[in-house]
Length: 130
Image 1 (cartoon, rainbow, N blue to C red):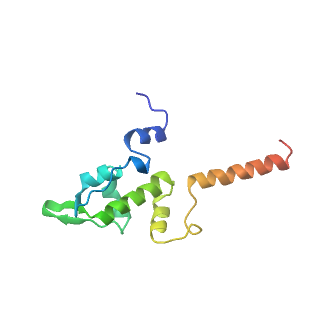
Image 2: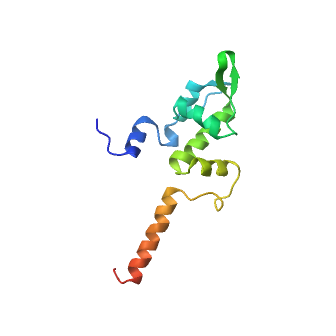
Image 3: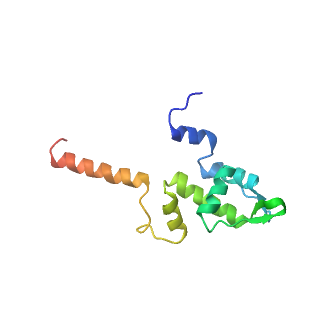
């Protein structure tokens, strides 16, 4: 199977719609594998996010195994939405999680595209190209 672009590849390996994510069961602790399945985020990415987001704290128990609580699973879903769906950078997602307003947070890629397109349209009208 030939993949045309990175977005198509990403859609093939991860669910993109929130409705496609499974419901979070009523458990006290989740393993990293369970969190990966519940959030659509691979395990190595979860380990990396633990270093990048101080809010994401897991419990380590026997054999240095990671266990997440319900709140952390919700937080991983929120981070995933900010990074993958909304197009934030790691820094932008961090700011948003820390309570930064939309004006303080960096623009998403889609917002930048929309703004640039409006400038191009304005220039076309100003120069009489339409």
